[in-house]
Amino acid sequence: MTATDIYRIYFHGPAYQVLAKAWQSGDCVMAEMAASLPPNHSPAAMQVLFAPRLIELCFQTAGLWDICVNGRLALPQHLREVRVHAVPQATEPLYAVASPDVEPGQFNVQVVDAAGNCYVELRGYSTIALPGGIDSNLLKALRADSENLHRSATEIDVQGEVHEDLHAGAKRGGVAVA
Figure 1 (cartoon, rainbow, N blue to C red):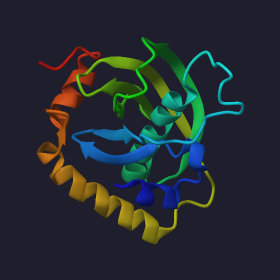
Figure 2: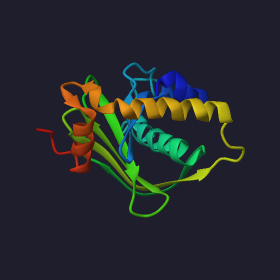
Figure 3: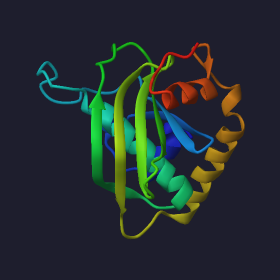
């Protein structure tokens, strides 16, 4: 799924269009964070405790799982735990890996780099559906795009690592992929 496809459904403004592309890998949805985003806040030089767009990357990636699997657009409702392990360098590509939690209707999401280093973890994230649903034509196109990317996920290279290895690194808790 490309950012163009995703943001036909999502309603985020330019500063929070954090997804460059996304794909399915097994029971997970993975997404690459957009490289060029406008400033997060104004004035841009004002310091923040943490990069809020990394949390948004988690929310939107889990939301894509919900859209593709359940056909619903939803907003955050509950979050059991957030762990921030490190602040990433601004130049390295980042990826979110969203998978179902053991609790039905909840997700776990990690933000990792191509080596599998984990920066952020969300556990027990759940959503609440927005009324009205998703336009059926947009949903059909997004699901078709998702299926096409799922079939070719192991063929796409992420800085020398295949997506399956990225997924495995995230599943191991962010341990670097060898």
